[in-house]
Image (tube, rainbow, N blue to C red; front, side, top):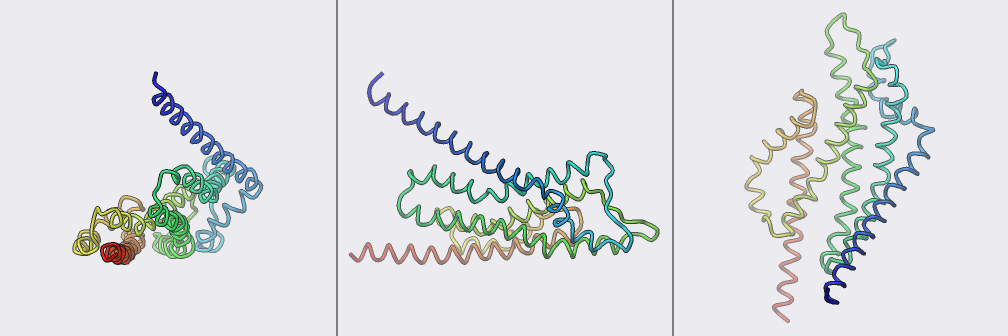
Length: 253
């Protein structure tokens, strides 16, 4: 084996070792956060379920159909909260791994994108928790047929909440995706703007797939997705303008 091949192999092994170490660091961060939060698991569950509990009729409460649900539902939620809180550190480890292979101009764009991705994902979850939940649960409970006692199961609620959190968190990443497409030259702002009618339909299709089968909840996801798409186009126009100015400066020098 030639020296060049040996150096290439060593470099690949070094990268794999570094990747393993960074993955282990991420796992340790999640475990540490989980252990720190586990004592407050019931409080965390109550905090997430507060909008539903507040919307229940007087005298009604949530129930646990499965005997193990009172333990495993808060346990599961606490684990997901730990992953969510560790997200900035996980992204930092990802950034540290790929940053050496990026050019200077790519780093200048990547850092704000990483930060924006975290903020937008948190923003989507906050939107669901503080705005959507109160409206949706009040609506569902208000339309319950007469004689039906509303008593949601804690495991069913958790599955619903996690689905909504994930859907809104991902949906709020649309500006980043649109910006990346424009920045990478895969699409132009004007061409994306021309496809606006198809995007609106697509937002409702995605909302239909990611949320419960009711038009109200789907609209609460589809409309913000559309607005965020427009925000991505706006950011794309700004980066295109900046790229044009840099090209003019280079050609003029």
